[in-house]
Image (tube, rainbow, N blue to C red; front, side, top):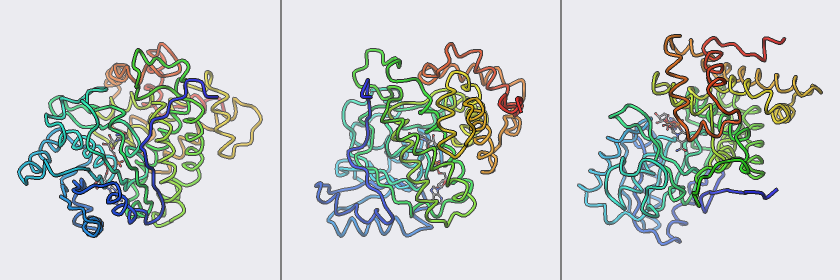
Length: 414
Ligand SMILES: NC(=O)c1ccc[n+]([C@@H]2O[C@H](COP(=O)([O-])OP(=O)(O)OC[C@H]3O[C@@H](n4cnc5c(N)ncnc54)[C@H](O)[C@@H]3O)[C@@H](O)[C@H]2O)c1
């Protein structure tokens, strides 16, 4: 059970309705004096959250500077703009911690700033794995969407405008010091943000549950890997997350004011990240990065469109795992093949119910673009190498062509 166990997480995970109010006294107790708050204009101009946060920090003897220039899918330029603003305002030497308020985009921007404020340089200096010289400034991540899990993970994803692709800064030192999950913050998410983020969480949970086992995962000679394959602990979190997503995502999407559904999805996102943040991901994300490069559609959508087809491709090799998951979400067939088949179809149906395209053709992809999508997905070797079917060329081709046509092999056998 404990064979090749690996779990790397923030040192404090705090959650609950209104739990954001517990933050300032905790930061005071930890000895912090000056915060950089990283957010976007929705939160600074259309909600009272930023002013309330600043007031509570002031009451705890902590001064704060707000950067509210966050954008969806932050770019290298936005990181540099924030860095310049901090320098110009004379805050660089004062800031001793960073607070991220927002979705995965603002959290990733804050992660990069936690490095740049301490060590200088440019974001590109740190792209790749293990390139940060040491601990960045302590980061407190307060997610306002339920999906990315960036508040737990070791990565920051930014857009490198020079190549128009997403690049990752990865290190276990980049994991936030505190992840604060207050489901109340997700109540204002519009349906499309709820759907995209929630399907991202479901993808994280399913993909990391089914990824290569930690006993087979190639860590190379890295003594401190970011990802290390799935193990008993990560699978416990993933299994719980999958059940929560199937039970509550549709309600959160259709009725955003439903508090139990919002709380369940906040938990689902957290648990998924506690799984994939150490186990890692594979084909869905590799293929989705290539699709995002082509269409610039949101991260959650580009994942969701591939998820059913990747599960479909795994029905033979991971049949028992798929059957186990199907049972956990209420399927009652006795034949494992039938259970696996039903899980694939249930997943595709959930994606469709959330208003997300279920085929690449619906995304506007042309058949002539499929070879590049396959090639670029295969090129994300850090993910592709963990896919349970190796070599991956033939199966990636089948996944992409099925996804283009919207055809599930699982359905052909009806
Ligand atoms: N670092 C990681 O581990 C990791 C993992 C997955 C995804 N990501 C990244 O996260 C990003 C996607 O994040 P996301 O899905 O959370 O969306 P997002 O952060 O890009 O936000 C999307 C939009 O929703 C708005 N929004 C966020 N919370 C809201 C709320 N409570 N009420 C109203 N509007 C709200 C934002 O202002 C923004 O306009 C992508 O850039 C992706 O690459 C990072």
